Image 1 (cartoon, rainbow, N blue to C red):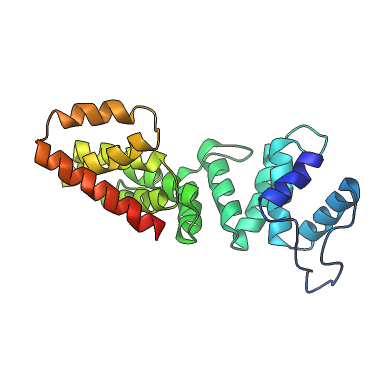
Image 2: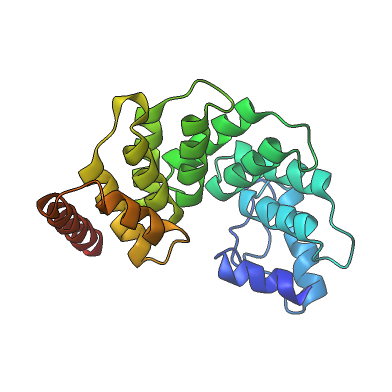
Length: 227
């Protein structure tokens, strides 16, 4: 129970606005048990943030009961349908891997897209992966690169390696060794597993000037993120 309330603090969900149709206290009462009853009441009354938190509790078994993936997915869907991006991403994961609901990768891709459009970096990365792989719909390298770049800007370091690999392979006519070296340089500097090895292999195929240009590109990208 304590872990669930701590999750609420971490996710910025501890305060929840009152449900308009049934006005009540605007913050949970003292005490974990009372607070959790309050969250459940809010969720059932239609509060999206409370629904998301309740989904977390069922997914991770934080209410003193065994985890219940189906119940978690049910609450994530309720919150997702109200537009909460974190819930949309959780629902997409459940659909992609069949956690409590049947696998439906096309539907997962749709929900990742909704969360990605709202700026959720992890959803942007997952959407990019599905687009790159052609899972749940047509393969689209250009859109995959777009969303990997968005995820990288949002702090998902795995996206740096993915971009470097895409530009190295040149799928869809996108080969660009300088661009690949830029992204792999950033990935290696962020400590991504395997990035340094990929960078060394790529360096053998490039001139010194090309590598220096790519390193300059990487520094400019980093500087832009700090603005």
